Structures are given as structure tokens and as C-alpha cells.
Image 1 (tube, each protein chain N blue to C red):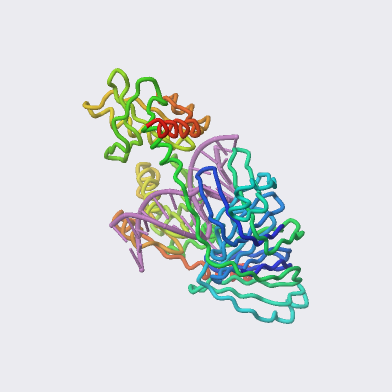
Image 2: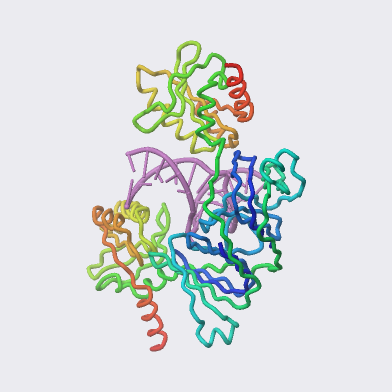
Amino acid sequence: MRLVIARCQVDYVGRLTAHLPMATRLVLVKADGSVSVHADDRAYKPLNWMSPPCTLSVSEPDPETAAALGVTEVWQVKAKDGDTLRISLAEVFHDSAHELGIDPGLQKDGVEAHLQALLADHPSTLGEGLALVQREYLTPIGPVDLLLRDGSGSYVAVEVKRRGEIDGVEQLTRYLDLMNRDPRLAPVRGIFAGQQIKPQARTLAADRGIEWRLIDYDALRGMDNADERLF
Amino acid sequence: MRLVIARCQVDYVGRLTAHLPMATRLVLVKADGSVSVHADDRAYKPLNWMSPPCTLSVSEPDPETAAALGVTEVWQVKAKDGDTLRISLAEVFHDSAHELGIDPGLQKDGVEAHLQALLADHPSTLGEGLALVQREYLTPIGPVDLLLRDGSGSYVAVEVKRRGEIDGVEQLTRYLDLMNRDPRLAPVRGIFAGQQIKPQARTLAADRGIEWRLIDYDALRGMDNADERLF
DNA sequence: GTTTGTATTTCGAAC
DNA sequence: GTTCGAAGTACAAAC
């Protein structure tokens, strides 16, 4: 990885045309050839970037820009589809290269899938007497996250979201409409479950006769660990 | 901005739980307090990050981790809602700080808007005998980029994209369906125009009876300059 | 302040 | 390879 701190001007021509006036910035050139330009704020998004695969070529500035802006070097980063990032470097304050090696990669925990798995193991969290029939129960328009059965034998369709929003309620509504047309399943009621559920999603769910449940992920995980310890 | 290249282990607890095993990475600490951790690939997204506002505090590792992993320093980055990024530093290969100042910011240039303006000025580029009726012709479901009329007086709806993809064809299809229900407009035919048009967009357009046209942006701009010179 | 929509989205999985 | 959906999405505009 090469780290360059320099006064530079950046021009991008590709999906849009963008221009960064001359200022001091960090330019990162990574081992995969990708290039990014960072300002001194914002953690997530670079000011400008070129995703790999792309190729960097260094050239001299034309005499006028060299004279006018003090540009000493021009980096041209090109993608296969012609997208171009042009970095015109003036003063270079820092320039260093480092060997990093391949990263072992991120281990994620707690995504929607895990939430679904935990709820599948502990369906009673969603309501007294509920039992799992099937995960990812397939309907013609897609899979229902959890299909449960309550104490009286009625089916319950559950949609699990990390953050419950309106579209999730719409999705569950479509499943319920469909399932309730199947005499082997009907009547099916719905539960919308999420770590968070937006106010409007709650309102819509209630309006559709769908129950909603807030899920305490940490508590569920605790139950799971307790299980592992017990058995 | 502080640049640190170090062997480190990273743990994030917040909206999810994530873990990065010990490896050499770049850690960026920006002037707004934000922190990001980069591997030696991918331009856009850091491996891990903490968005501002957040606060960084440095502490000693507990003796066991210090002994086991060689951790010499622990950085704890906390957001207001409790999200925490913990960076456990072992070997530090590089550590430097730089004053960058406030960035003047990105200037985006709407190529699509310009393309539309140029085509409005030169509608015959899209076909013999075509003349402009209106730009941004409003339908109940949104504006059609260009409404033209051909030599026989029939209307032509034009959708302009820098990169034509399937969704653009779908959009134009909706406009055409609607406009063709208006007896004052019907029959309306469609032209899908773009600097690039993806193969599947071409296929879909053809299938829908929509013509597509590749636009030479530079040539159009040339025509525009020529006009300015003439008049 | 909250909701909605966009992004040079990126990224991964399913098909 | 293409399409679809999720993301610790981030980010800006509209309400």
C-alpha cells in the first residue's frame, strides 16, 4: 500500500463527471491497483476512488497546467470501461509504501440470518406456545422466514428483519394473502419481528392485523449460549 | 490526519458484532475524530470504521492479551449510541500525522442533464425530421426527458441516460403506456438514448418496440460549439 | 427531527 | 454472467 499526502486536483469522468479543486489530501494506492482520495473527514467514503481492476499510469503535466497550478505529476487511473480518475499532484508532503499481505478478512456476527436461526431455535420468544414448523417456508412468491404453529394448531408466518420497515410489512402481507388462499394453511396470522421496528412499520402492521415483536438479540444469544452450556 | 500502519486486531460491537484477526493494516484517524481500518485492497469500503462524531481513547492492554498477542496499546473508539470499535495494536510499522485543512469539496457535473440539453438543441441527432416539443414533459408518473414530434406529426418520447440500463427502459415503457392512453398524444413511440446502452437494455428495448440510440457526447458538444461560433 | 430516495453505491448470494 | 437484495450502508433532500 502506498500512502501519499499531497496537494492535488482530481477529476473523475465516468458514471458522472466530478472535480476536486487543488487541496491537500491523502491518496491511497492499494495492492489490487485500486486508488482512493481522502479528505481529513469522514471515515467511510472517499472523496473519489477507482475500484479494481484498474491501471495507474504516471505522466508529465502539460506545460500550462504545470505553470498555472504547480502540477508536477499526473496520475491517470483507468478502468476497463473507460472510467478515468486523473490526479494532478502538486506538492508532495509524504510518500511511503508498505507491505501488508492478504487480510484474513472480517468475521461478521449477528446478521439477519443469525437472528432468524436464533428465533427458529427459540420460537416461544415470539409468543407463548409457538413451535417451529419450518424455516424458509417456500411460497410461490418467495420464502417466508419462519413458519410456526401456535397452541391451537393455527399457522403463523414470521418475517424477520434486523430493522423492520414498511417494505418488510408489505412483503409479509403478500405472503399472508397468498397463504390464506391455501385451505391447508388458512387461517395464517403474521408476526413481524425485528431488533428495531420503525413507527410507520408498526402502524402499517397493526392496520393490516399483523402483530409485531421487538427482538432482544443479546438476550436470544444468551439463551443460545445457556443451551449450549446445559446440553 | 494520522496514518498508522500496524499489526492489529479489531473488534466492533454495535449494530453487529465483527472481528478482524491480527494482521497488518492501515488505520486512519481523521481530523473529525473518525477512524477507519483498511486492508490492502478495495478502494471504497474500509474493513471497519467509526463514523463521526466519536471519541478515541487509548489504554493499556490487559496482561494476558499483551502476552498472548503482543498487543502494546488498545484504541477504543466510541460513538454516542454505544457502538464501539476496539483496535488492539501490536507492532507499529509507521505512524505519521499531517495537517490537511478543510477540503473545498466535490463538484459534481450532471452529464445526464447536459446530454439532455444538447439533445434538446439538436433533436435531429436522434432521427431525421425530429423536432423538439418540450423538455421534461410532465406525466402523472414523472417527467419524460424529451417530447419530440416527427415529420408526420407523431409524438416521440425520449429517455436520456448516460448509461442505459434495463431500469431506464422500464421507465420509458411506463411513460409510453401512459401517454398512449391519452388520445391527444397517441400514438407515441419511444427512443432510448444514451452514451452507452447495455446489451440487455438493447434487447429489452427492442422487445418493447422501443428504438435505442447511442449518443456521441463529444460530437454533440462540438455541434454546440460550432453553433455558438456561427451565431 | 424524521422519512424518503439516491449512490461513481459496494458486496454477496442465488439463479 | 446476470439479477436480486442487504449493508454497521452513508448521505442529502424533502417533509
